[in-house]
Each structure stands twice: as structure tokens, then as C-alpha cells.
Amino acid sequence: MTVTKRFLTIFSSLSLFGLPDLANAQEAPDTQALFESVNKNLDLGGQFYGYLNVKGDFSSLTTKAQEIYEQIAEMAEGQILPGMDITGFLQELGLQNLEALGLSSIKFDKGFRNRAFAAIKGDRQGILKLSGGPARPFEIGGFAPASSVLAMELDIELGGVKDLLEGIGGQLEKSMGMNPLADALQQPIPNTTLTIEQLLASLKGTLFAYATIDDTKTLQIPEPDFPAEIPGIDFVVAHKTGKPLYAEIESLFEVNAPQGAIREEAIDGTTTLRLLIPDEATLGFYAPLFQITEDSEQLVMASRPEALASMVIGDRLSSNAEFVRAASLMPQEGNLFSYASEDIYRFIDVFSEVMEEVSSELGPLQGEAMALIYGEPQSIVSVLANTPDGILADGLAPMSYKLSLAYAAVMPAVLSGAVMAPMIHQLR
Image (cartoon, rainbow, N blue to C red):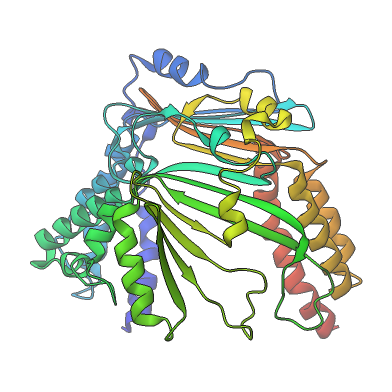
């Protein structure tokens, strides 16, 4: 029997094993309290409400997954390593503490307020640690300029990725007698003094980012016949505790950049690393730079000096009435905050124009689809917050969960029809 036939036989037989009895796996005595802990974070009376109790399911699923794996290994006749601890691998993901999930969408203004909540018992582990630490007051309103079309702040904790890889590597060592992930984490990053493990451990803290539009500039698109002009976009990214990374960035450019392509300036305790773009380059008006100051741990990257100046010149986002209104409807503390102003719809219009120029047939359909997805011009806001009993996602958006799920259900059929239609036409 060939390997292909053997595995067809294996997977065909999986239906005989059955699925775990999830209803019996749940620990029922406190189901009402669990429901209330999720329900208090959701909106009632809207377009969509959903609740799923998964308490106890993880244990049953991992046990069944282990049984299925052992059956497959036995039937594979040496093609699959026997004795692998599938339960251990799945536990490293940290989902065993997940108890319930809830979703809600309620009509609000021109769009919807969508909320999702994951109830977690005990400490967050595995992939759930990647959402950062305890919730804290948001600061983006005082950081980004009032003219920002996009603004975001988020906690990054890539040390959690390192911990996850180490845990999975430990499981591999138990089963295989070797840990390939340990060697991978110790691999040096080219042209730096950091290993992958050290980089992951150092990429933690708070990031701020924003983008503004400069109508006096136009993005240069490499395509010579590109049918639409896109307004100039400036951006700033700041790592609140990223100063230790500056030396690595400096070393990276010194090794890889052509002679004379970078210039470092130190004035009054502020160090700026500028990338000198040759005239024949296609970056247009961009002149990227990095900056640190002696009295701050903050590392800043900006698209050009004018973008960097926007950090200290002009009103802040907290003086923008539309931002204040939208932000006031969201939790004031959390681990991620993102904001898109109504001006972002200008780029949606540009994209629609491009599609119409590219295809007279697909262009209008694309425009209608984008109008349906993005709705009327409106601010879009999202928040992610770690709470004492779970993780909350809250947001104002043009589309509800109900419509999103409907699209997810019908899109495979639409795509299949689009693929099959030309074939059927040719057969005719």
C-alpha cells in the first residue's frame, strides 16, 4: 500500500472514533455564574448575540486528540512517530483556562458596536499571554496629532512567543529526544549582536503609531500607468522603551547601507539617524529617520522630518471632537486602542477609482462591495483589554458580527461559482 493510500485509509477511519461528548465534559454547577460573567460584557437587544460555554471541553478534546493520534501512528506503520504527547502540545497553547465566549452587535449611529469577550479562569497562558499585561489608561489621545487619519497604541509582549516556543520545544524533546526549537532560538540575527531569543525578549512594552495626510504630496507608485493619484501619507512609530534597540538598528544600517547612505547627528542630547535616499530611488518625498533622547527610553521612527515634528507641533488628537466622541464610548483602559477617522474613506474612494480604471466590469462591483463593507463615512475604533476574568474586544465598525458571519458563510460559494463559471462556459 502506498503512503497516500495508507493515509486515505487512516483519515477515512477517523469517523469511527467519534467526537467527545462535550455536553458531559462541561462542569455544570456554576454555568449560570459563568454566563453572567460573559453577559455583563455584551450588549443586549441588537442584531446579534451569541454565547458558547466551552468549560471542560479542552480536556475532553485533548484526550480524544491523543487517542486519534495513537490510532493514526499505529495504522501508519512507522510513517508517524509514536508516543507523541499531543495533549502536552495543546496544553502549551494555554487554552485550557478558556471557559466561555460571547459576541454581540448593536446598531449604533452609522454603524455598529461589536463586542466579544473570552472568559478565562486563572492566569492567561500560552497564546493568551500575547495580549499583554494588566489593562492601563490609554495615552494615544495626548500623543498623536489632531489631524491623524490612523492612530494606534498597543502593548507588545513577544517574550510570550519565546515562552511558547520553549514550551513546545520541551514537548518535542520529551517525544523525540531533541529540541530543534532551542537551536532556532539561539540563531543569531544577521548583522546584529542579537539572537532570535534575545530579540523576542526585547520586543516588549508599548508602541504608538499614527498616520497623517499631506495633500501637497503624492505617493509615487512604481507602475507608470497607475490610474489614480494617492495623497501623501506620513507616519510615526514610537517604542516607549525601545532605546536599547537603537544600537542594533545603527549597526544594521552601518553594515548593509551603501557608503554615505546614513548620517548620525547628536544635538543637545538628541541623537538622530537619517537615511539619505538617492535621487533615483522611488521613495519620493520620504526621508526615513530614527531618533532617541538621553532623558527618554523612547525610540522613534518617522517617514521624514516633517512627520517627526508633528509629535510636538499642533493640537493633539484629544482635541479632535470626533475622536473624543468615539473614544468616550470605549473602555478607557486596555492593551490596544486603534482609531481611523472618516478621512480614511478618501483612500477607499481612490481604490474604487483604480478598480474602475482597471476593469469596467469589476470596478463597479468592487465599489458596491466596499460601500457595503465600509458603509457611510464614519470613525472606526477598536479596543482590546485584559480584565481580571478574561479578554474584552470592543469596537465601533461599519459591519456587524451578523453580517461578517453571513459573508463568511456565502463567500466560499461565491468564489467557487466565480471559478466554475468559466469552466462551464467552455464545456458548453
